[in-house]
Image 1 (cartoon, rainbow, N blue to C red):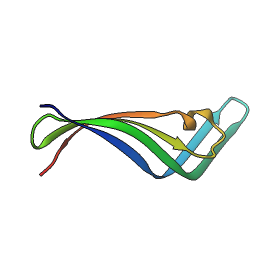
Image 2: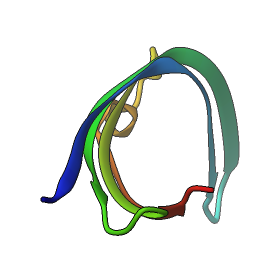
Image 3: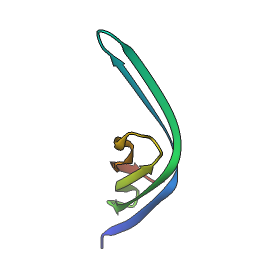
Image 4: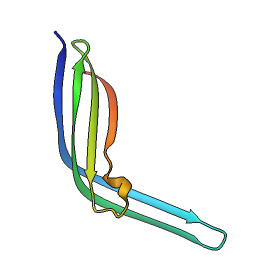
Length: 82
């Protein structure tokens, strides 16, 4: 029987964005830090008694002005439990 778990993610995230633009006539740099909500969901498959494979989709909701901070992130991982 496969061991599959549904996961939920909720918490706070502290994100920092940095940008630097150099042109022939001007240089500009900017950075910002924001704390926001982190929400997500995923699945975990128990391959053995100690090894799990996990996939998550996580959304960081911040007040940054850039649209890319409001897109979901995807992670795939392998973990070992004792």
